Image (cartoon, rainbow, N blue to C red):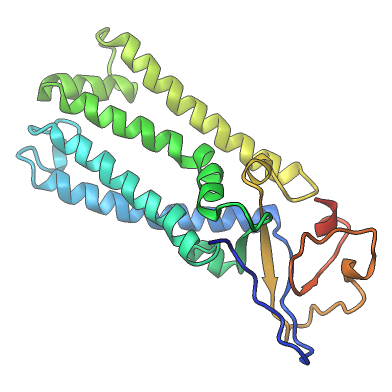
Amino acid sequence: MSAVLPSIVPNENAKARYALAKASNRIFARVLDSAIVLIVAIGISLLIVATDQSGIKAALNLHQTWRYFLIALLATIIFTIYFLVVPYLTNGRTLGFLVFKLRIYNLIATKNFFVNLLKREFFLWIIVAIANVILGIVLCAMSPNDAHIFLTQLTLASNEKTNQATIAIFQVLYAIATLLLIFVIIHMCINNKRRCFIDHISDTVVIKLIDVSGSDLQPTANPKTSKSRRNYGLPGEIIAGAENEIDSL
């Protein structure tokens, strides 16, 4: 299965029209998506914590440490469903992308779209998800008191000197994930071809669908009229511009 843009109906003037998505639209869509999944994940986590003897007021000091692993596992499942399964089933859309009229497009139709989505998301949240699940396993194996000390050390809320090596490993993992996210955002903003490195490694492109009945029609701005330009087989009419010509990918 691969993302497929709306096909053109013969003998009709209306066409699927699109441009490369701007960095601002991609960032805002991602923020909206992240807010949605975080609200759901936090809500479920609070329900899990609330059923422990410690209650929500002592969330970092659970009496039953297996709950740490359950929270991490469920959060990972939620992110997986939302950022991998949902766009795979909807041909490249999430709620945030739907609001901003964006879509992830598979440039090479023969490549598996789910695998490409997996490549895209690996640097954005999968690293953090893996670290969280491993952290949940580590905490589950500890006593409640040791788990509490470990968490306070990890969040820099304690000066304890125990488990320093393990703490350092998790801090490095989270630091790497944060730096990668910052790099993706910066690269997306400064790259005038509108494709950052996660687009290249996953053979995808993020496009913005344009309302065919809107006032943005530019009948003369169609790179398909030039044989020297490439359109990667995308159907419909491409809205060209100095900063977002799809043939300049």
